[in-house]
Length: 424
Ligand SMILES: *Cc1c(COP(=O)(O)O)cnc(C)c1O
Image (cartoon, rainbow, N blue to C red):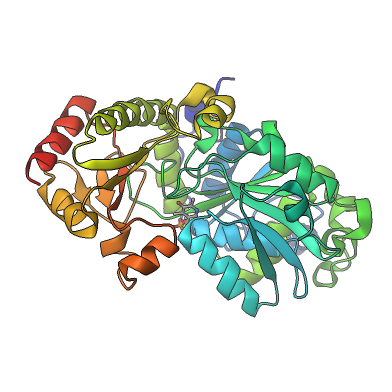
């Protein structure tokens, strides 16, 4: 099936006489006919739901849909994108281990990896595309467990170079984990480019309407955890499950099964059934929306490029002038690059704030990637504590504006920008 069809049809399959639309199973518990039946579930010998912290029928339907969209063997929904990032790493790294991360990850992920996970004894080592392969490879050692990157980085919009980094990670015997939030499986399926695990903040385009926070981990089933003895969590008996060995009992689904039955059981970053219902509703139109977002954003970016009188630079992978364009064409469905456009105002922070205050249609919010056009100036909000000099050191221009193009008419969005620029 085409991804547009999967968005609508996959996951919930009603039987004769059942509701046509995915029901919200608002139940924490499940009834069994005998103690023996339930015991089998606890021994992981039969499939079924035992407790909603671990799984739920509404949530399971959305997991199935997203696994199909990405082309993976299984998926697990989490209460947020942050929880998905945490569990995706913690599932295969323990105190004393380390991993490689791209330096351009989402700010929340960067905090989690460099500050909070450090307190768990797991060290993240930062790399950038400017480094040579030799420099990057020199950061790996026998405790390195994975390589982590974003398909389209938030907010720099750099496009991940799969053909360079996937073989590099695999040459060191570690999996590639990709945060595919901005691209969504409509624009990019990372498993087709060598990724082994994909994660999402479904809070962004997947939900698409800014109504529910959520995350997803998808297992490609591609990585051989038994080679090299690096993943004892998966290849040696789990005491907390009567000695089950995940790779032996669950084969290609070892990683995602362990994430659920061990880490979701213990950490409890569980999504509510209503969150899964709302996410499923959003997913039905994902293919339509992401194409419209991308078309609109390209038109907005092209317009911004003509305004050299007031705008210093425009960054959008879909623009032919972008240094990311070649990779966008290669990995992102012919260059469709989602709805997020970045640009720098001449005149810095003050001009950026005046511009934003003058917009009528676009609203100022701390969010990206939903149906409504919105805008954020990191210098006056998320990075407000930093001086202009410190901002530049962190790679953020004080006049940097992150513009999330919605699915309204592109003409209306452009005339809103035009009007705001006229106020400067
Ligand atoms: C927002 C975001 C996250 C975090 O997701 P939450 O759902 O807000 O917890 C992770 N990665 C990327 C790329 C994001 O944009």
